[in-house]
Length: 379
Image 1 (tube, one colour):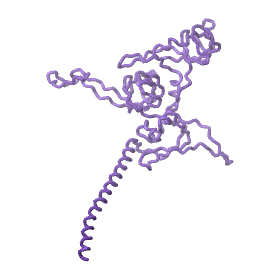
Image 2: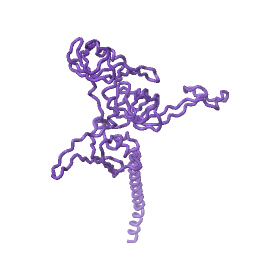
Image 3: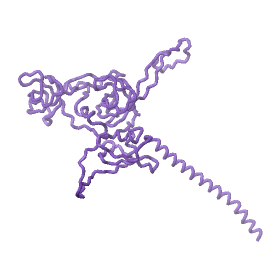
């Protein structure tokens, strides 16, 4: 009997440490998994940094833009799609947000997420009838600033404007053409369109690095409506923003433009420069329209947000002595004794209209004046 108990005790003594070892191993696995989960949540939260005093709820008001609202919650407003869990289709065709809608920030999952509580009905007093409100959804960026650049100014590639329909004469041989004037147009072949914008060739835009011609600015002058097709066709001037003359060109009015898009970062590495500033100013600030030497062919699309950096100048090293120079980087484009200062990030620009090789952008933030040749790149 004693021998039997002794054998059982020895067997138990051998098994118990094995059980403890298995328990310890399982415990370590659980701790590791919990740590990874916490780390994952932490990383997700860090990927979308929030403003220090972000609101938990925000009621949209008339005049708000997507950029304004995004900036209330996010330090990086271009991360708007991430906080809404939007896919590419939703980015290209965003759902409208209306004044009166309530936006709620939910952080219960460890990752910030915005949710929309729609408020599209109103109770009429004294009755209890509920009717929908006819509202206009908010815009991505101020429409009063970008509107004229969506359907009027053009950037024509190569010499496309030279082959466009041309005003060849006017009623009573008038030299300056104003609204109500009958004009005659040659080379008008599309009889499906009757409304045209009038343009004149402007400045040539070149790439500052390669000197390649990117396109020609077409200066918007006014509008005309075709009254009779033929060679030449007859048309009436219906609007004149500037003086219109014979030899000015007609371009089909752009009706297929998008003014509602989501701010988001490019998926690829974009690097370019600002090559023109609009508004008759040498230096630009927030809400200024600029031209960027990158376009659709480079992967840019409406809504893309780019960082703006002041290009670091090349200066002479005041302490440089030729005889002390022992290590020369043969791959460097700098001359001996030259130092390239680092680029300094100074703002953000949102692309709102793209052509093949150039784009219009609106400066959204600027900590310093923005100049022609300042760099733009994926943030």
